[in-house]
Every structure is written in structure tokens, then in C-alpha cells.
Image 1 (tube, each protein chain N blue to C red):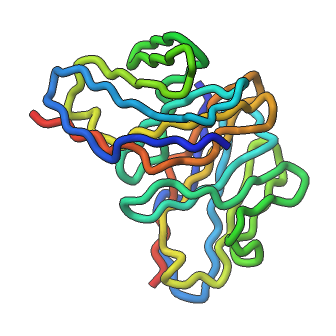
Image 2 (image 1 turned 90 degrees about the vertical axis):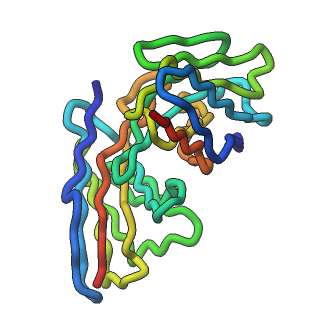
Image 3 (image 1 turned 180 degrees about the horizontal axis):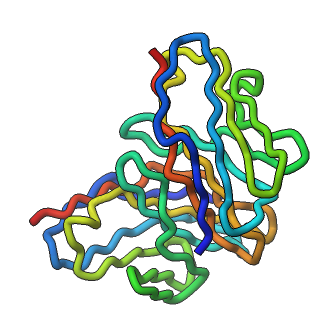
Length: 116
Length: 112
């Protein structure tokens, strides 16, 4: 089945630093990937849609200059949290779907970001 | 995007069948219904997807009535390892209406 790999699984950083999270589709090409954020005991919130070779589309209320998304190849999207602050601490999850009629989304295992 | 409504939580004993219903009154003609399972600190995992009537795979069944305004995920003989949050999403990727928006989900607790 389709596999999405996310790295790192856990990261701790100091306030003011930047953190990069990678999302890879291992056995399929993904022209579009999606980034979510999830706070404890809450549902997933869509942050942005990552498009290969073009700019990402951000959901309302998500700062594009803070959450930089790069989708340089058909199998890799990165999310960089710039100048991280404690309130950015969350669980970040990426997803992608193989092209094909109504293929469901497949999700990475998430990245737990803690900003101290 | 169709909005979905699910019970916030459910409890079940091991070995029982569990049915989780999702309401999606505004589902569009081309929308599919997809269910995901999420364990703590993990990404959601695809369970099952359907359009109408009944779909069955090795882990679950999905029942969709004729009006498609709701759907029921059926988990046969649950075990402790089925304790998780279950989400239903509706949408149609073919038309660009990718099912991306997660509702609050149903937190299933399986008790020994």
C-alpha cells in the first residue's frame, strides 16, 4: 500500500529557532501533499496544501511566512516552522494520496514539536 | 465541503460489535465517504471507503443508506487495540473536492 514517511518523529527546539519537517511519499508520486496540525485532544486542522513546483495554498489564519512549505519534487514536501515559539508546539502531520480515482489520503506518523 | 457529525465518544466491551454512525446531510452526488482511525501520537490510518450500499474489507464494514445522508462504520468483535479515535470524511477527489476536513471524530474506548 501507499506509504508516507515523515521525519523527524520528535523534535525539541529553543524559542526563536527554525525547524524543518520532511514528508516523503515512498512508493508513489504525489503532486499534492497536505499539512495538518493537531493539538492535544483535538482534531486535525488543515494548515496548507503543498503543490509540486508551485506555491503552497494556506488555510485562513495560517501564516505563510511562519510556516514555509517547499515541494520541490514529486516525492518530497518540507514544512519549516520559522522563529518557533512555545505556542507552535504541536503535532504536525503530513498526508498525500496516489493519483487515481478517489484514492484515499495516506498519512505520515507525525512530528511532535516542542518549543522551549 | 460536506460537514460531518459523529458521536463524541463510545464505550464497548471486548468482543462486541461496534457501530459508529456519521451524519453528512449535505453530501454531494459525487462525494465518497472515507473513514480513518487514529491512535495517540500517530497519523490517521485509512480504514474503509464507500459510495453507497455496503462495503466490506478485512477490518470493517461500511453501511450507507440509499439517501447517503449518513453512514455507519461497523467494527466486528473489537479488541483493546481498537481503542482509538475514528473520523469520517466526505468528498470527491476526482472533482477536486478532496476530503480534507476532519470533524471532531468519535473516541472509542474498548474495555476488557
